[in-house]
Length: 206
Image 1 (cartoon, one colour):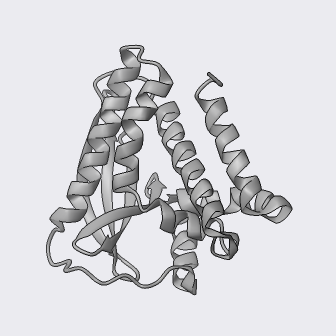
Image 2 (spheres, one colour):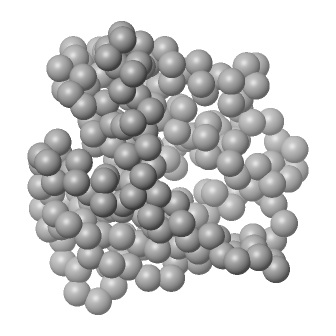
């Protein structure tokens, strides 16, 4: 799915319009958020190369994900309208499961290290006061892989709402499509169970 689909979901009013931060030139706060995530990803890769267990890597990576991503806003979009219609305890359980599954996916994807680098290469304005920060995953002898992070301002800081693989494929739009059958069949509680089960499978069930 394309970036335009994720942005169309946002524009449809599923999220409030954030306060617009100044975007003249570069935006140090947004770049700092992405730089912190990039360093955590590289640490995941190095730890995997050192054969650190997946669950230990997840425990180290999860706090960084919670700090750099706006997971509640992402789940509100991906699980709309069920998330907003649910009681607070159910929302909290779903958000915890979503964070755990999201972190487990990073542990699974970044599971080897061979001198790769992550380099921030630019930023672009996005609709509704948001910002896209482009990062290249540099691999020896191979074409760089582009990851574009969609960030929204939150007070005086920026947090990641979506990731566009190869600059176009929206993680948030993919999740929204993925979750709909489960939500229609069993609501937010069913999605919570699925997310936790999926995280367990990724981590090896241990």
